[in-house]
Amino acid sequence: MTRASRLPSLAGLILLGGCLGSPADPGTACTLEARAGITVEILDGTGTIPLADGSVLTLKEGSYVETVSEAVDGRYLSGAWERAGTYDVRIDREGHVPWRSAGIEVASDGCHVQTVALTAPMVELNRS
Image 1 (cartoon, one colour):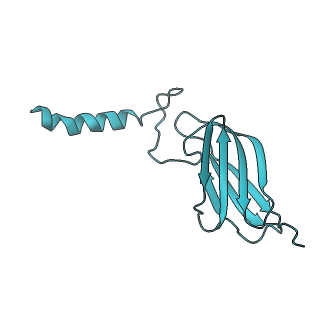
Image 2: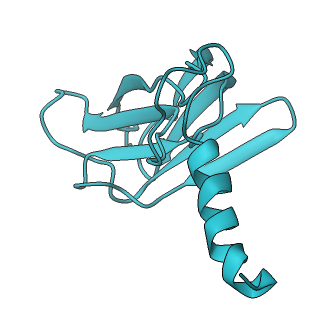
Image 3: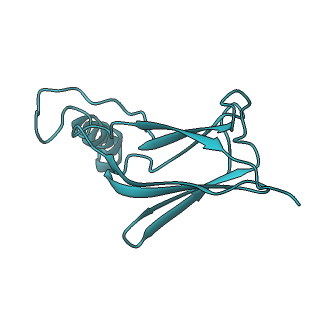
């Protein structure tokens, strides 16, 4: 077997080895999917109309800052992909009071983060 023909096999073993288990439990099979650490459902003040399109999610943990504006189904913004930590979360939307939540803890099971689902009811600014 030439060196070149061994490379695909070696790469497959490295990839497979990375998915066989978590450091806490080597017998657990991990998947290759990526999971959001935080998902925020953004709704109007009545809790009925989705407002994620046109909103901006900002996640902060220490010096880490992530902004997300691409909505899923016009209802959700997600971030902190496979990144455990304690986050301050902010939603901004033109014409609305910014929504905030501090100290949101995202845990990991060794394979993936455990998604924290939040709901952000957006309150319209008073227009005079």
